[in-house]
Image (cartoon, rainbow, N blue to C red; front, top):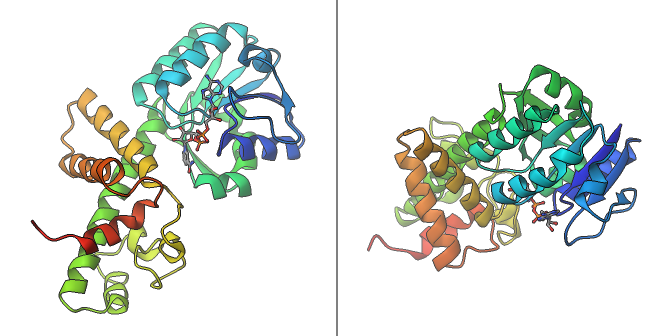
Length: 290
Ligand code: NAD
């Protein structure tokens, strides 16, 4: 396939390389970064998308996605597919898909989980929204860039799945970290805490697969001085998107709201910026109730 790839940052560059390595003809554009090896460089976004069968965007946020979409949609050829893999608000995802469809294109939103490591290894998980036809068109590309793709329904539903998942993740990571810090103060060994909780009803991915306590459980960013991994500021971004979405449909999300406040405090007022999101544990360790 001829693929246009816009946004060649930490995630986009390795994803584009994997597509090129698999034999696709990939042309890339980024405002700042250079094209990685194997990806042809376009001078403008428009140039990258002309003639493309599929255009992939991997951009920082919904406002940038909307402005790039305004620029590229008129330049795309009829019947081509616009596939946005960025994490953005549900409203922007749906607005861009509507604009693409109105212009005679197919559209899918497919945010990812798996981080930079998953992007490089081609093991991302895609959560996709869009028509059956759009999903079928881009499925072979999901197989190259990832290990799993779930079609979650119409446009915007991929973003909805992503932010609901990450809202659960943010809240359970905080709960796991505060429980470890409480256990410390109660004189419970961290290994005992892990052995019990990881096999009891308090278990979760945060405890079992990504344990925030260094030296306990499988290897995780806590074993590497909390170097991300999944940075606290990216968790904050996703939590904010969850709250924006919850407001738009009047859904009560008290735990998501509190998790957003705590990550905001951690990233903006404390030392959380640049640390893994599991560094909530040393944060709680240092604090008292007051
Ligand atoms: P990044 O900041 O490294 O890359 C974004 C790229 O977009 C940058 O290179 C930037 O120059 C480029 N860009 C910005 N505006 C542009 C424009 N108008 N035209 C062309 N290029 C433009 O971010 P990233 O870590 O690659 O993340 C990309 C998306 O993936 C985000 O939405 C993020 O939330 C999501 N995501 C990231 C991770 C992660 O671990 N990094 C994990 C899952 C999802």
